[in-house]
Length: 163
Image 1 (cartoon, rainbow, N blue to C red):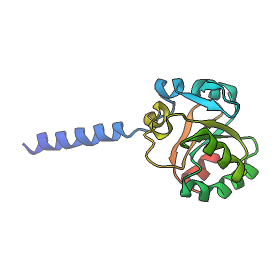
Image 2: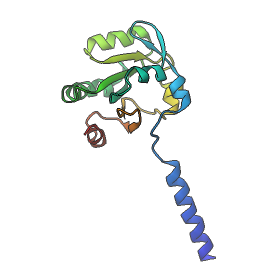
Image 3: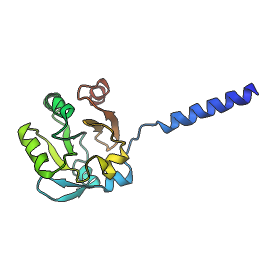
Image 4: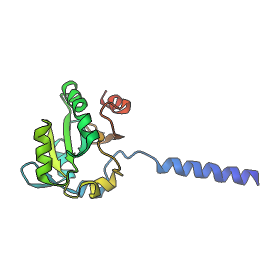
């Protein structure tokens, strides 16, 4: 009986560890989700990533109404100064395009910007289990997710992934 119980417990532990594996690629629904460029054009995440193929990318999911996001902007700007080869891709969960564009201007955020029309309820957001912003992801030059989740721009795992 003890051996069976031990086997069941080990199996549960193994299954729960497998379920928490960190993705190395975006799900198809995320890649097909539609964003809006600063110029007002619709574009999929797949097309956005293809534009930057061969370059490392730091994705910053943010919103102009988010206090933690605003607090992180100076740290992101510092990362931009020391990681000049990296593409900084800002995906906004703002409520409106007007708010999004005002936020970019107000906080002088340099980088590539896209608006998520469905915000934190978008297919992209759901596919990455977005439960908090800011949210930082790092994509390596080969297109693989190197860092899946950080909520602070000075997170030790984020800094480690940059090196």
